[in-house]
Image 1 (cartoon, one colour):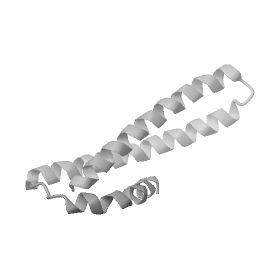
Image 2 (tube, helix red, strand yellow):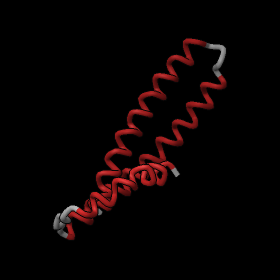
Image 3 (cartoon, helix red, strand yellow):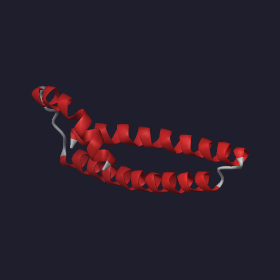
Image 4 (cartoon, rainbow, N blue to C red):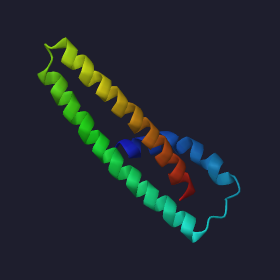
Length: 96
């Protein structure tokens, strides 16, 4: 769902990119890009699961400020990783 939302948000820029001359990609490059896309998608799914679990743990530890702060730091790290993965996914999706 998140990937589709990101793609929808980037859709207005797509016609400008489509108007640019297409780069010639070898079959091997395309295959490697698709493989990396799949790897990123699996990691994004895993990160989403981890984020959901952290949210649950934060809710359980709501009265323990130190625990919540520690969990929040983990959550921020995951969010940063997710942002990087989504950016890379978008770059690769344009090439495929």
